[in-house]
Length: 219
Image (cartoon, rainbow, N blue to C red; front, side, top):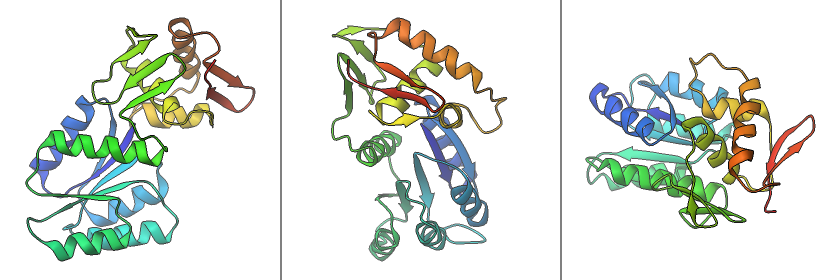
């Protein structure tokens, strides 16, 4: 999944980015409010981690402008210890959840997983489509209870589709959400990953919507 990380503390930002990427997410980072505003308005993200105390433009203003522009991606705000008024202002501005500093990285990852599930209409941490299960906590994928091995890119494609069951997802959308911004992107490789997935998953699970993209359906 593709995450926007906005944090001006260099050490914390590096730690969070490393943790997010270790968890398999594509992460883009900004260290000030103006860059964050631009990225959030022009990019497509599955979730945002947003610090409120930012230089150039504060996080609350950034969030308000995103929501005013119709940007609906889930936003987890980071707030100072015991600053209840900041938490209330963030939620009122359109934040979906908040985390108080200092925090454990595991809690941040868990809250992000929950936000992305809710945004996709999923309640359980285990995504299910027919006999295929994907545990968003461990990354484990099983078919009829038997574990299968996937490459990192195959896993990202499957996870993105499983968050959107029944919806047609274009090749360009998949490309945007499985590659880093500075990666040499080639949408043709999506066909390769989908082809490999089809060999490992039940027949008919991934449908091709000709000229549009792919759709995940329970056989």
